[in-house]
Image (cartoon, rainbow, N blue to C red; front, side, top):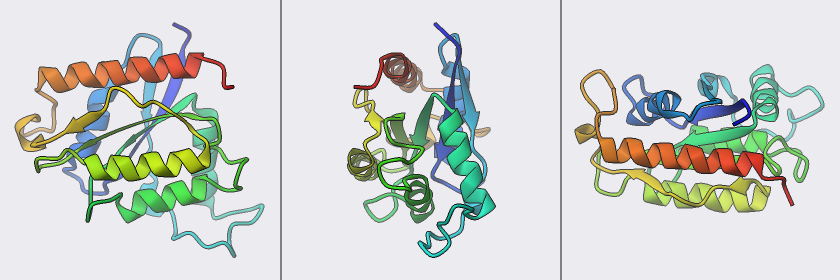
Length: 186
């Protein structure tokens, strides 16, 4: 496999986030030749404002767009808030999706996974993200779906993934993302 870089973006700002822990696990589970870089600037991105979305957008936005453009693919890891995507993650995607049709996400291979302490593993948040990526025209990995339910039972007290079934699904998702990256865009 040719070396590829995947930008990993967790939609949670919480220090003890299961989703950020899942993203750290993805770094460890990545196939040979894949590097998963953790994006840590989500907190710094201002609310989307078309008036400031100019040729020189706010620096955190320029950095996000640059990092997505430079990556071969993006792995989004999302919690679920109120049956949907956390506002900070949706805001970052709104910024990254501009200019429409020519954004850093257009034709970019993307994959989604999520974790939740409840029984649904961020199912609805992942569905909402999938809908956004259809409009953005990203190259979405659709299977396997990685929905980590009852996340407190799958990570230890240090945030280390201990569940072998979840680890196997994460590996399969990263393999599928690598395949999408290596498949030319239509």
